[in-house]
Structure formats: C-alpha cells, structure tokens
Image (cartoon, rainbow, N blue to C red; front, side):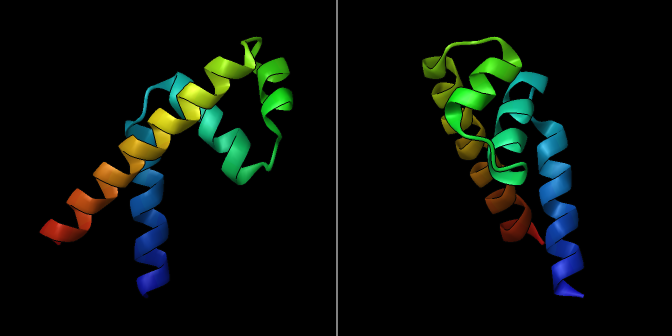
Amino acid sequence: MEAKETTAAVQNALQELSPELRAAIVLRELEGLAYDEIAATLHISIGTVKSRIARAREALHRLLREKWSVG
C-alpha cells in the first residue's frame, strides 16, 4: 500500500511542476535520457537542461516533503 501512495504522491507532485520543468525531469529520471539528448529533444541548451532539472528536483523535494509532513 505504501508504494502505491508514494507513486501517487510523486505523480501528483510532477503535475504541479511547470510543463518545462516536468518535461526535463521526466526525460532524465523516467526515460533515462542524457543531458545532450534532452537538449536536442526539447531544442534547448544543455545549460538550460541542467538548470531545469535542478529546479525540478528542488520543487519535487519541497512538494513531497510538504506532503509527508502533513500526512
């Protein structure tokens, strides 16, 4: 049961991200693409990919911490 709850919490947190951040983090963490592949896919620079992934990770960490501290 806890695994389903965790999966749901992560999916909900992903939906709260901006489309730009969500695309970058999904391509990296779920699809396993390298930074250069993500840059080519999204037509952005590698620096922008790294920035978006870092911002997405920070936001997800905050959102999930809020979820688990409240629940």
